[in-house]
Image 1 (cartoon, rainbow, N blue to C red):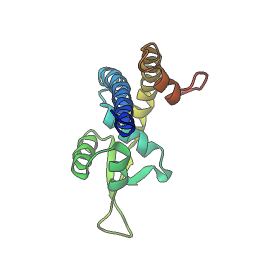
Image 2: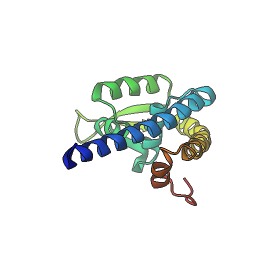
Image 3: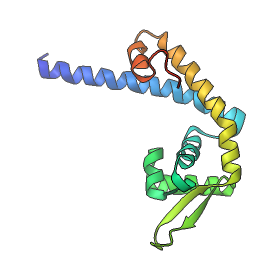
Image 4: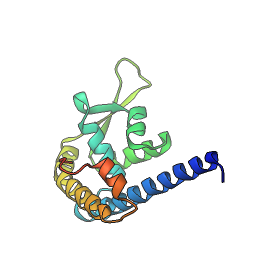
Length: 149
């Protein structure tokens, strides 16, 4: 194996390690958020992204990027959240083709209730992952000791 091949293997191993950590954390978050709040991780991500915006709204394309979803998947997700009265769609006044999404009061309330669960499970999952030798270095890079997450 040449140097070029070694670099490819190192990148591939790094990607597999990152994917393993992501899957571990996402699985823990999914179970806890569903059980306690009836939210999936991606639904939480959307509500959280909306809560961090000035005026609490985003264009659908921005929301798709924030949730790492396709446009069609974002539309379906927004429809489900709208049906649950957690967010609403608003037509853009300066561009009639544009649509914003915005949290409702119920969405804000559910997000506020879910945040402590999310944060505690994330911390616990990172602590568990830090005890897996293959994940220790990445966990340290993602959440250095002594930092509040």
